[in-house]
Structure formats: C-alpha cells, structure tokens
Length: 134
Image (cartoon, rainbow, N blue to C red):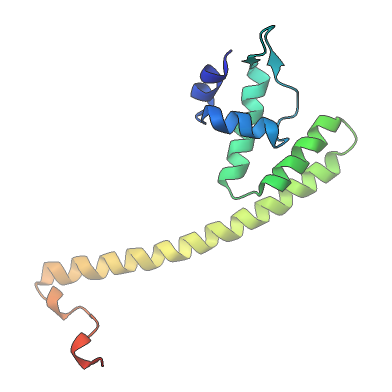
C-alpha cells in the first residue's frame, strides 16, 4: 500500500513514517516500486503501530531504535529485548502512579467546588488576597 494509505491506517502522518524510516526505527527495509515510491506491507504497519505505542508511553527514540535493531538482528537476543521492555514498563508504571495521584487531587478539587456551589457558599473558596501584596 502507498505511504498515504499506511499513514491513514496507522494514524501517523506521512512525515512521521518517513522519519521512522530515516531514524532507523523500522525493522525491515520498506519495499519500493520501480519508480522509488514506498510500498508498505501489513508487517510494516504492525511494526509502526508498536513504535507509536512505545513512543506514546514516553520511550525515547534512541531506545526504540535499539529495540528495532535487536528485532532486526533476529533470534538470539530475546533476553536483551525483554530487559529493554521490562525497564520501560517500570517507567510507565511509575508515570501512571504519578498521574493517578494527580487525578486524585483534581477529583478532590472538583468535589470541593461542586459541594460549595451546591451549598451556595462558593465565594468562601480560597483565593489569593491581592490587596495585601506589595
């Protein structure tokens, strides 16, 4: 399929597809037509989806590149691939915990505002007193 169709199916831009290829993030060379146009296969789309998920979870490009290199090398380095993914999972889990904690704070503030608005005393909510500054 064309690069435009690959972009549509993966949800990334044509520019991003080209960047992934230049940055060494693809595990196989993208096929080309006789005129030099990229021609993507289903396997390419599956790999691009993996890359976008890793990137969306904050994995650095250099780490995705290393993972792609390991996959492209073939059998024999599965333990290294596993270690790379487990390390990244730990980072993602830590980020999720931080986001959950922040969400709890936001939910608490929402509950306070709803309660004060329902009670009719929202004007009693804390706000900085700018008249005292200076």
